[in-house]
Amino acid sequence: MSLASSTYRGRLAPSPTGFLHLGHAQTFWIAQQRAIVAGGTLILRDEDLDPDRSQPHFRQAMLEDLRWLGLRWQEGPDVGGPCGPYTQSERHDLYRHAWKHLHAAGWLYPCHCSRKDLAMAMQAPHDDEGIYPGTCRPSPAETTWVDTPDGANWRFRVPEGEAIEFEDGHFGPQRFVAGRDFGDFLVWRRDGLPSYQLAVVVDDAAMRITEVVRGADLLKSTARQILLARALGVRSPAWYHCDLLRDDQGQRLAKRHDALSLRGLRDQGKQPEDLLRAFHTRG
Image (cartoon, rainbow, N blue to C red):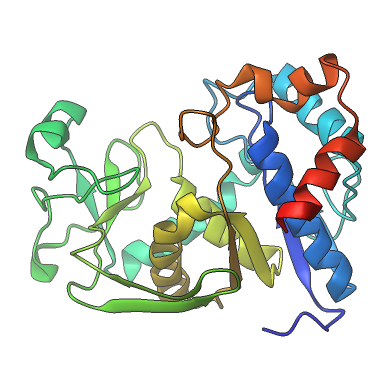
């Protein structure tokens, strides 16, 4: 996709489950730069789907730290816009509608495996979710029709053996095979919440996102999201996955790295220019 279009719509999608760290800052800075080059619009989306970990003080810190870094967005929960609400916990009806669409089309089935069952049955995990062994997967003729997703985990039935290919703006051609690189994945949890995979596909389509900029750890998730978008009848955006920042032990940064959080760096006296200069050098 060319970046020379004023119809470009990018997004920042932080979660208020901890303080943002240096890795988030680099990815969000790249997202803003690509939106600026395109002369497009940048959207901030508050991805607060995890009710146990999402906290008001993290949400406030998220907004303050992004502004401190010099990031600016044209649409978001704090400034409004035509595609709101921009907070995922307020978009539940859209996710339920998507579940109904996928269920009616035969893509979903209920899964009653416990976490212990999955831990014992799954292959060694290849990513965040591992490869589901198909314990609860029915044949298409055995699909049970219900009106609500409540009370069960719901999985998306991937097309076994199909290669999902896409061009990444940073890493180039990508290819993942359904059933080998990833299996039937969760789209709805028994506690009544959509999965990350479903929510971001629904939101990116509804907010007319044209390019997703995020970390390289989500490359495989892109293949899942392409399948979901196709099943929902919406277009997938373009993709740009960023290199991950790592600590001195080679581990990718996480929110537990308090010393490398934006809040921690600010307390140490660091200035936004120091961080941006380093990002510019890497970019």
